[in-house]
Length: 222
Image 1 (cartoon, rainbow, N blue to C red):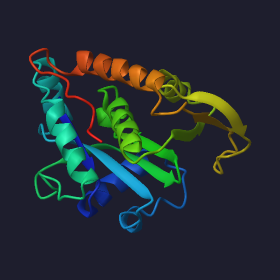
Image 2: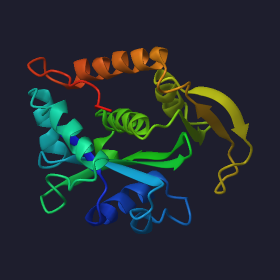
Image 3: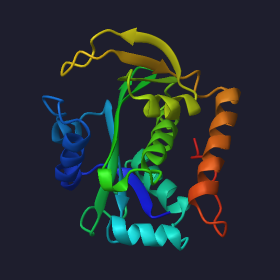
C-alpha cells in the first residue's frame, strides 16, 4: 500500500487542520487538535503518503507498488505500547487523511474521518475506519458509535458495511444548516460474529489494495 497509518503528532497539526477546513468548511470552532494530543480520552490517527504526492502515488498504485500491512500494524503497536513511532514527522510526509475518536468508559465514539480531496477514492477513509475499529478493540471498547449527516449516504453505506446500524436521529444537530444527524452504532465489537465480519472485511480490503505477493498480518495481539 502507498499509505501508512500512525498516531497524529504535533507537527501534523497544520496539515490536519487544513484537511479539516476542507472537509468541514462550516464547522466552528475547529477541533482543538494540539490540546487533544495530551488528552488520554482522545485518539487521532493520520494516514500518510510517502510516495511523493497524489500524482506519483497514483502511478505507484497502478504498478502495484502498495507497500504492506505489516508496517501499518507495527506503527499502531508502537502507539498501543506508548513507544515512539518509527518514521516520525521529521521525514517528508503528506497527511492524506485523519480520524478522531473519543473513549467513554466502554464506548468508542468516532467523531470524524476526513480525507484530503486529492486522495479521495483511494481507500484512505476505509483504511482509517479499519484502524480505528482495531484501536477501539485494543482499548477494550465494547461498541463504537458515531453521527453523520442524513444526506451523507456514501458515509452511511461505508459504516453499514462495517456493522454500524442506525439507532436514532439527532434533530438539527449541525449548526451550520440545521441538518439532522443519523446516530449509528455497532454490535459488541468483541463478539465472535463481529470479529468474523471484521476479518472478512479486512481481507476484502487487502484483496483490493494489497499486492498478491504480500500477506495480510494477523489482528493486533492482546
